[in-house]
Amino acid sequence: MRHFVQFENTGGPEVLRLVSEALAEPLPGEVRIRHTAIGVNLIDTYHRSGLYPVAQLPSPLGMEAAGVVERVGEGVPESLTGKRVAYAGGALGAYSTHRCVPASRLVPLPDDIDDATAAAGLLKGMTVEYLIRRAYTVAPGETVLLHAAAGGVGLIACGWLRHLGVRVIGTVGNAEKAELARAHGCTHPLILGDGDFSEKVRELTGGAGVGVVYDSVGKTTFTGSLRCLKPRGLMVSFGNASGKPDPLDILRLADHGSLYLTRPTLAHYTATPEELTLSAHRFFDVVRLGHVKVHVGQSFPLAQAAEAHQRLEARQTMGSTVLVPTP
Image (cartoon, rainbow, N blue to C red; front, side):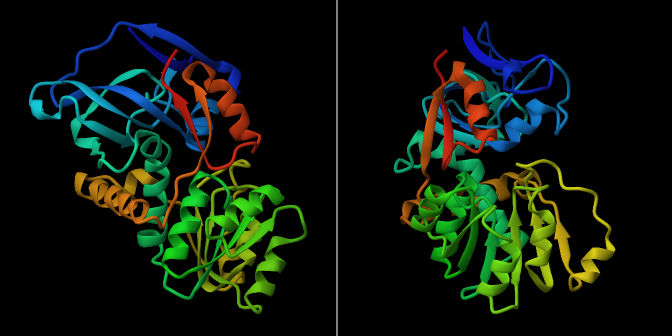
């Protein structure tokens, strides 16, 4: 039997249910994985709430996990059996003790990357990779603004950006999170709600502003983020933790200095096996070298997925959250 989390209707964390069914055999091109650790991400709450519509209901949940290959389908080398692997992205269904997934979307785990680190960090790490290496290529010595700097993506980004010689101004929710972000490489943590963050960013940059803003908060920070950019700066809106931003009058981009705006997703930056492998290896490399530390701040049994969502949405978590795949 396998145990997995699903929801029959969209809504709050209370809609999540743990159910069971017989183990499935992998189809051609697939493998069956026994999960050892499952990543929890904000995008999971978007699917559950209906902000990002799912294909049909009831729906499984989750996009990221690590585990061991138990069985391979037709066309997949038998040598994969018993191998440690991870995946991030693709169809929903990671909140499960076992799962069949396409072999082409698997990332082999190096011996020096443990399962919890992979499950807690792969989706977030590849997100950071495309944000700072491809959506906008940061340069040593420049200053960026990073929202939610003490979150799972934020802590990875702080460490990676510090390694690249980038000065990070990061917003956080409280003093404890400010210290955590600072320890991971955030140069100037700013507590949201403690004055106008856009004015503080201008002060810290001598009035110039920053070349790029990485904003995963959304509704409550979007307008202020635009005010932080220097002329021809780039606004990277990649999340909606506080809700979807209000519709934008495109002329505001001109008013604030011929700004650029992008709304990227990981799927479009790991669409091919080559891009997926490149992104994952870049992340593993900075972890292996100690430049990035994946901070697992909290873990929950699979059956307590609703509590994990509640804590995440209430901004009561620090770093990454994982589910332990026992019912």
